[in-house]
Length: 392
Image 1: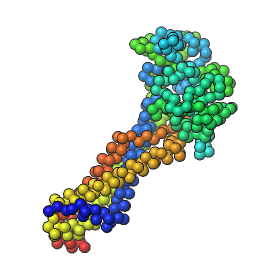
Image 2: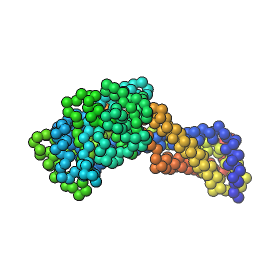
Image 3: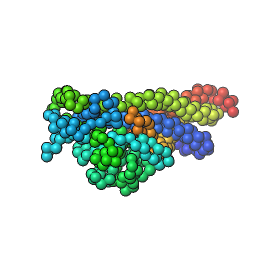
Image 4: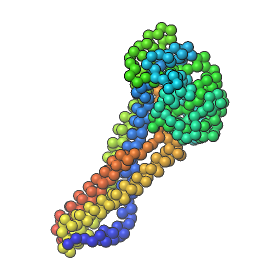
């Protein structure tokens, strides 16, 4: 004899308070799990996704970042036409001379932070092929215009399209927002290199040069030719290797985040499972009554496990909505999650909740529902009806 579906529905209605508590605790466990997974994934992506495997970054020898390097116009002209550098169809070398500044910018919360400003020329988007203009347009040279990364747009006052952002000694008009798949370029501001150099009154116009390798080019030979030129004392590094080295400054934060996520996830799971366990355990007398009415142990177990599983799915749904709301608040209200980079500027991590993050949370919620419902129901159903009724 099976228990009708209406029985489980009436039980949920009769215990609305406990049901809501159970769903709420599972939802909190889902939020904690999903947010930490998304944060770990987003931070890892920001740290390792920057750079192209086909690019070289050329800096002054001994510089550990483009923020501490200076490179002359003559050096740029000497290396841009070297064999092995890719070219556009019109013959223009894919060599992007760039200048890096680290001025203060005011956050929407009223604080001040160092932000990385990159002075580039129009060829930059062809060299940095992972970067695209997502909204608005690219800046026009010598017109006081800039484009800002997605993370910058959400964090700093005046960083929206059409607004004026004060950098250095003047205001710059924001005309576009750039995206790069969550990499550190989304924490940068790009403007015309010559405009920025004039504003900063720098003795050298560039910090470094990004070169895109031609298909089939010998990278080692190109690096050797650049570094062996005694006139300029330069060093050439693969761009991915450069950003991997830069990311080491945030490695401790990443490890700490992983270490924190494990016990928090375990604690959230135990808390939710314990709530579910208590909810079913309190119904021992009810289970004894069902046994006395002739329902088999297997039928009772199936009913309680299905009920617990459904509650866990509802809790997952509520938690998934809560996770999305947390991501929205972090992105649009708080301007992302910021951490310091080796260049003494701020990297902004945009929390991106992926399907895999929610998939792990769904599995987590399902385990909570099954374990929290099966164990106490099994124990209660194993009692003789008289013993179960004595628990009243």
